[in-house]
Structure formats: C-alpha cells, structure tokens
Image (tube, rainbow, N blue to C red; front, side):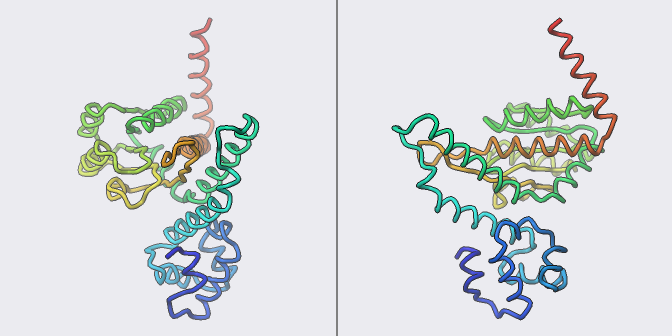
Length: 282
C-alpha cells in the first residue's frame, strides 16, 4: 500500500501527535518532504523523538526514509496525472515535443531535489576534501558521468580519478586505503563489477559513497554515504528510463559545495587549470 493511502487510512493506533503529523504530511506534500525534523517538530508542536517514532510506526527506520518514500509516492501520483499531457507521439510538432521534454525534465530535477539529503551532501563534501584520492567508478553511461565528475573535481585541486573498465576498477579497488573516498555512480546499484568493487574497497577501509536511485540494492549494503536521485521514463520506447540529468545535477551541486568549502584556494587552482587548458589553443 502506498504511503499516501496509509496516511489517509492509517492502520496504526494513532495518537494525538500522530494525527498532527498525518495532517501535516497530507497538507504539505513535497514541501514536507524537504523540511527538516526541527521544522516538522515546530510546525506540529511536538518533539523530535515523536517524529522519529511516527516514521517507525509506518515501517521506516528513519524519518529520511519515510520522506523519500512519500516523495516517490507523490512523484508517481504526479506522473500518473500528467502522463497524458507529456506522452510523446510520432505526429506532434518539434515545439510540442520540446515543451513536453522540458516539463518532464523539470519534474525529474524537482523530485531529485526533494530526495537529496542535504546533510548527506555536507558529509560527502567533508570526506572528499580530506581524502588522499577521490576515485569515481562507473560502467557504461554511468562511466561517462563518472569521468565528467572526476575531471571537474580535479580542476579545483582534488586528486580525483575515474575508472570505467572492469579490469581497471578491480585493480584500483584492491589498492584503496582508509584515506580514500570511492564514489560509485550506478542507477540500479546492481552492476556486478561495481558491487564486487564496493565489497573489496569496504574491506580495505575506504569511505564508500554512491550516487544512485536505489536503496534496496546490493551496492547500497556497502555504502557509508548515499545520495539518491530520481529517474524518469520519457522515451518513446516503453521501459526505458534515464537519470543523466539528475546525476549531473548532483555532481554540480557537490562541485559547488566543494568550492565553497575549499574557498579561495579552489578558485585560484581553477583559474590556473583554466589558463593551462586555454594555452593549448594559442
């Protein structure tokens, strides 16, 4: 049963505080999903512990897990309501398709922004700036995203590396240490090479991070820090989903937060690397 239906017809013995929270989440929707526990507590005039117990009554270990599930449910409902409006057909004009694609991408980014744990972003930034190496692993299309991230982060002075070949991934996984941060980019979290790599890196003490759409995956069992993103199906072929835009969004958000954390030093290095690249055209 969906979270929305369970909130509308709770199968729990709801206390007065529980009813306050039920009304709050039903009334505020996605805005409630992005609210902190302090904001929710203040709005409902209850304690932090009561909010956490509420999430557990619905079967979630943390409030964050509850909010992610609710955001996904709200997103699915919104997608169903707008499916006819955004369905692409072969006879429509290019302008019509462009408007539908824009709407779908806006929804994708909005849902990703709701699912991101901003405290999680902060934790990852702190780990990255103190790491010996920042190693990105990705296979297939995720490999292209991983390579883009490594290049971008290297240009602000981080020792960022990327490996997308199966043999290279295994080789460099075996050489990680507890001074390294390993970041996996995987939509499903089920790619065999990445799961095996995560197991190796975890045993070697590396900090394991993932940018993924799935929490119930083999990869997730090894991660210390996970940043979640949304996925949308907007291809003419059924069953095709794409997450590149949402992953780029997270990569850029981390990049900006890293610059903010590193300060003037990062900007100076960025300028030096930019000058070096521009010199190639002279």
